[in-house]
Image 1 (tube, one colour):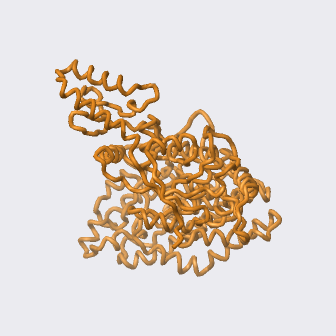
Image 2 (cartoon, rainbow, N blue to C red; image 1 turned 90 degrees about the horizontal axis):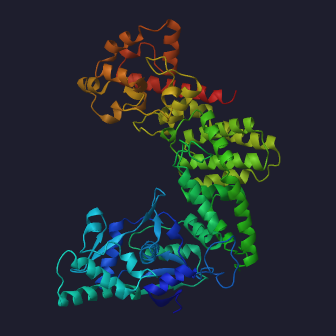
Image 3 (cartoon, rainbow, N blue to C red; image 1 turned 90 degrees about the vertical axis):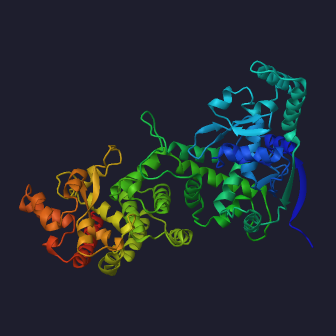
Length: 583
């Protein structure tokens, strides 16, 4: 039987040295680190007790011998081995033994600080109390520091301990032995299964799932990001820096920060791939970036370098801050104001791909391009175009661009798809049916809110605009605008309607200022409506009824009849809002 792997034994110190040299590719030391510190503590405790801590799974790099890296970094070698399983363990061990900080999920830098109490061999997460406790080594990383003598380290610890209490000679021996045992963890044995280079990425993913008890599935983006770490590490760092800064407000300089999306590196990678290779499915892109000829199955360093050059140029275009912020204006143009109105981040990202293609490849004027992408985004988010099979649908959309050669054709193609999707049946049948839901994150609801913004609608029973009160920069104890039950929940229960799926229908909500919402409480519509309409003229009331899709004399209607009629009116408002994008 021919196996697809070899079994190799390593000591921890060898693994750490190989990571330092770059022989083993460990991208995670500069990637968001998922493990919590108590899990790292438990890892060291298990090793100290001599327990097994699991296999490592490596994948031998097909171009790992003598290949030339793209870009520059501090590694001395191209990784011969790529880590498939064991990244969190190796990151933990490398970070602690080398005293290196890790990057947390919020992109803040943090050092993993583990303490050790030699008297009873207890590991702990260092806190303020432990830092002051002479019984503890407050940071075990110091034990393996290159400028630290193990003998002096032990002597210094015992000297500090003696300042707080007596230490007898027999205890001194036990403490020294415990610290020696801790130091010797650098020789802890690991077994690695090394997959041969001929194993394909799908097989690697399958092996990973089979041996990983957590059941986490690797995707193609994971593989491509790993390749970037190996062959173009600064490119991956650029991706991650962009994503980190997208979460941090900046008042002094250009920034990717916005109120719509906090993208992850794999999401921005998809944009770069879509722009550079006109691909949404990453499977073939990954193979191409490895330098693989899809026909001959052979690997070529030259081919790899060429394909990485395409990715490099594409990513530079994608991460340009001016283009990114200009694109986000298309979402504003579509009536959307913040992430609270975004039901699909995929729709945002794929719209960005098309925006960049229109800008770079067809050189569309910004004002025209913005309107085209606004219409496209409105349609894709309303119809959930990228919800079921996002890669397949986007692949199809990109394929339609292959025969396009002019800016006019580009516009006609996208607008044609929009028109073919938003048919009369969609507006009159599909959309009203989609509104028959109690989901607070319905795409149809968000499109209605966007339409209210596009139409300049005022909040119900207010002279302030919906767009003004949905401004994401407004921060107060109370939300400036609240979703109000037109038929209040308490009132509906009194008349026998108790199912929340009926009570919380989208068609039973309208935006009001929070003070009015509190004032209405559970009053029936015939009681609260007249008093809140008094300040408004006949013309203002007509617009109010139109914007908020209120049927004539709605407050006196049967509740279920009201829902049915209002859904149709909401659908018409959404259609009218979208029509503003065609003007």
